[in-house]
Structures are given as structure tokens and as C-alpha cells.
Image (cartoon, rainbow, N blue to C red; front, side, top):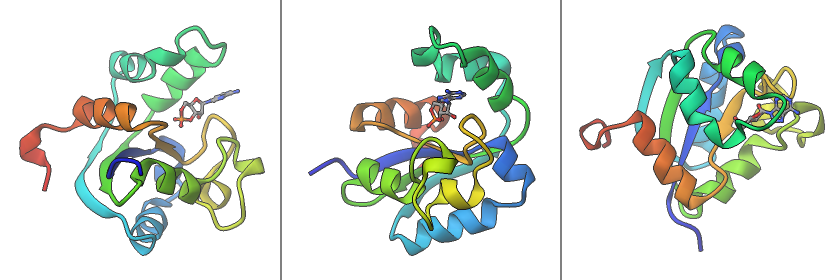
Length: 139
Ligand code: CMP
């Protein structure tokens, strides 16, 4: 059984496409509790740091530019086995390959602008949550 939190960001294109409400509705319908949430905009330096695990990948520069290009919603979500449950809800990284009804299928644009980020492990969920939220911002 996995741990009970995951971290997500609603990415700039989904924000611009007015998909925030739809995504939050899907999250709540799937039984996640919002522990913390904010609207913010990453600086280029913050985006580089957040995605530094991908620094050697060919798409890193594009990813950093995109993620710092506009407002995002950052959130910590709680549910049993949260990381896996959320990855099922969002679908495959590439929206074109994501299952029907998933967030990326319905709100994603392409593999880079894929609507939302979701943590890929319990360890990363904790690191990513700590990147954005102080303990006093969690409820
Ligand atoms: P995310 O879950 O935020 O984690 C890393 C991101 O890198 C991923 O979603 C994609 O948006 C992006 N990414 C992964 N593969 C590619 C790719 N081949 N080209 C562009 N972006 C990619």
C-alpha cells in the first residue's frame, strides 16, 4: 500500500484553456482531499530546480520555458495509495495515448503541455510538496 499524499500542478496551458475547474472537479470526484493549494507562477530558476531530475533530457529547456510561462495551480492531494491513484486519474504522459476520461486526455494539448504534473513516487511526492508548501499552508 502506498502512502497517502501526492503532489500535482495544473500546467500553464490547462490554466489558460480554463480547465482548472474541470480538473479540480475530477480530482474531488475521484475522492482526493485537498491538503494544500495555491495559484502561483514559477520563475525559470524554480522550474529548473523542480525538474532538475530531467536536466539531461533533450526536452529540459522547453519544459523549463513552458512551466515558467504562466500561472499554475500547485496542490497536495490526499487519498489512500495517492501516487498510483492520481496517475491513473491523469492518464499517460502523452495526452494522445491517455485513456478516455483521464485528465490528460480531456485537458492536455501535447506531451509537453500535458495539463497536469503528478508525482511518480511517494518519495518524490514528499519532496515536491515541500518544494511548494510550508507546514503552515497545509490543512
Ligand atoms: P510531468 O509529469 O510534469 O514530468 C516531466 C514532464 O516532462 C512530463 O510531465 C512532460 O510534460 C515532459 N515530457 C516528457 N517527455 C517529453 C517529451 N518527449 N517532449 C517534451 N516534454 C516531455
